[in-house]
Image 1 (tube, helix red, strand yellow):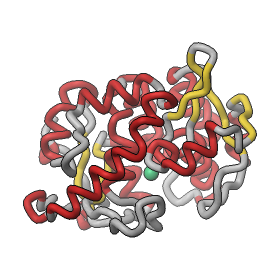
Image 2 (image 1 turned 90 degrees about the vertical axis):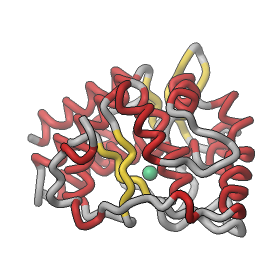
Image 3 (image 1 turned 180 degrees about the vertical axis):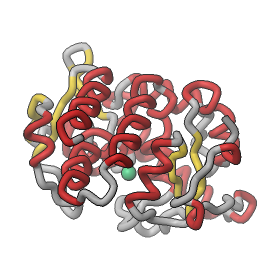
Length: 249
Ligand SMILES: [Fe+2]
């Protein structure tokens, strides 16, 4: 479905155009440096679904992605679209977009002097970190289902806080066991060389994914994660999202 055919009411004020031609050579060089920093480690430690998605949506090392071109490759696979937005969205607008398979994507890029840390999401976190996983059908369905469930919880702050923890420990900081090894798939790990190294060096405690525990587990956004939850398959996160929806209503 083309982006314009989707009716977004709450998110509409935040939708923008990506002015791809306005990126400077220096910004493309910063993107390139970020990809070169992360990729060798990810080839070893990211799940194969991420690496496949990176190729399938046509991401490149040498230039900042054109979101329209990314979406043109992504939509035929899973129906998802990487949709440019002006910045942080209010929760309702964010969930509305996920429920419509429109991933809110920022278009700005961090400064070359702060490669490792960005206080707000940027196009590197959003596209390099998140979007390749949207090419995987099960993960794509999970994220869509997550948005639909959260939309039904509109205004229920406590339940949405619980769902926010589910998002954090899957979409942002998820790890998965594959063929006897721990692999990363969460965007916060994919797009941070330092945090990914920390995981692979055995920094965090890795627990088996447990929905009850995750829904109650407060996290800090300003430090390395001391605890992560490993799933055994992507079907598992789809199922836990549905289970959370059933429990929280
Ligand atoms: Fe993120």
